[in-house]
Image 1 (cartoon, each protein chain N blue to C red):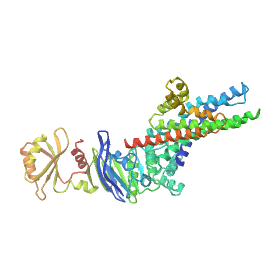
Image 2: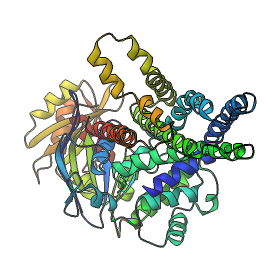
Image 3: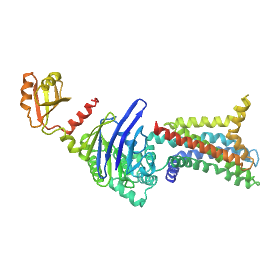
Image 4: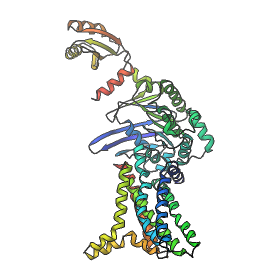
Length: 313
Length: 234
C-alpha cells in the first residue's frame, strides 16, 4: 500500500508538486495522468526516494521512505522516465547486477530468466544494451523494475517508444501485474490510462485535479444532468443566453471546435429537461447548435476540462 | 557494495579504460626503470618511483572521472539511489573499483624488484614500503577525483579539475617555500601529502602517514556522500 500525504516539492520559487495526497491500495493499478511538465515524474521520484520532498510524507506498507529508506526501497520496483541502463553491459549481466544491487533473495539465474521471459527479452539476453532498439531498452528497464517481485511498482511512462503491438503487450502485462502488486504508472496518453487502470489521478500544474475510478471519471461528469453542446457563435453571447435559462446550474466552455464553434458543458437540475429551452434560446440569440448530446462527455473531454480548469490550456 | 565494485571493475575492463591506463602506466614506468636502473646502472628504484608520481597525477583522474558524472548523465544514478544500497556502499564500491585498477598498475614495481634481483640484491624494504606509499597517495588522489566527479555531469571537466588538483598537491611544497607567513607555511606543510609519502620511500611504514592518507580518503568519500545527498535535497 502506498500512502502519499501533502507531498510538495519546490525548486526555489517554482513549485513542481503542490500538496499531493492519495492512497494506492494493494492490487490496484493507479494511473497518473497529466500533460507534460505536470509534476508526474517529480512525484514518482519522491515516492521512490530518488529526490526528497520539500514537505509531506510517503509511506509504503507503513514505513516512511525518508525514515527507513533501506526497507522501503526493497519493496519498490521503479522504472524511471529514462530507463537506468548501463549500456556497456549485456542484458543478462545488467539484470544480474541489478539483482545483486537490490539484494534480492531468490535463486538468481532462474529469477532473471523468468523476468526476461515475462517482458519477452530472452532472445536478446546476450546482446550489449547499447545495440538494442528503444523498445527493447524500455523492456529491459521494465525487467529491472520487476526483479525481486516488489509489492509496489512505479512505472514512469512505460510504453514510450514502443510500437503499437508492444504497447498492447506491456499494457496487458501491467494489468496482470496489478493483480499481485500495487502499480502506479504515469502517462500523458489518455487512452492508455483508461485501458489499463482501475483508478485515475489527473495531475495538472503540480496539483491533483481529479481522483476517481476510471468509469466514474467519465460518468461523474456525464449522466442525465449534463449536456454537451457544440455551438456556433460568439462565446459571450452563448454564455449569456444559456445563463438565464431556468434550471440551468452551470455552463462551461471546454474547448474550441473550430474558429467560430466551441464546445460547452451545461449542467442542469436533475429531472428537468432543458434541451428544448436551450434550443429555442440559442436560436433566438442567433447561435446555431451543431451538436447536442446529453451525458456523453468522453473521458478525453473530462480530461481536457480538468486540465483547462487549472488554467493550463 | 560488492555488486557495485564488481560492476565498476568489469566496466573498466570491458571498456578500453583499464587497458589504456595500464598500458600508459607500464610504458612510462618501464621507460623510467630502464632509463635509470639499466642505463645509469643503479639498483635503486627511487628515480623510477619519484618520476611515476607525475604519471599517477594524470592517470588517477582518468580512472575516476566517470564514477559519478557518467551515472548522472545517463540517469543510471536513479537505479543506484532508489535501490536498497546505502550511499556509503555506492561510494565505497566505486572508489574501490577505481582503486583496484590502480593497485594492479602499482604491482609492476615488484616485477622490477625481481628483475633487479637477477643482478644484485634489491632493497625489498624500500620497494615494498614505497609501493604501499604510492598506493596510499594514489588512493587519496582517487578519493579526491571521485568527489570531483560527483560535482559535475561532464567526464572531461571531472578529469581536468582532477588533474589540476593533483598538480596543485604535487607542487604544494614549492608554493610553501614562497610563503612568507610562518604559520600558514607550517600548516600547509602539515597537510602536504607528498611530505607524508616521502617517509614511505625510506623503507619504513610510517604510522602518521598511514593515518593521514586514510583520513584524506575517508574525508573525500564523506564529501562525495554529502554531495550526492545534497543533490537529493536541493
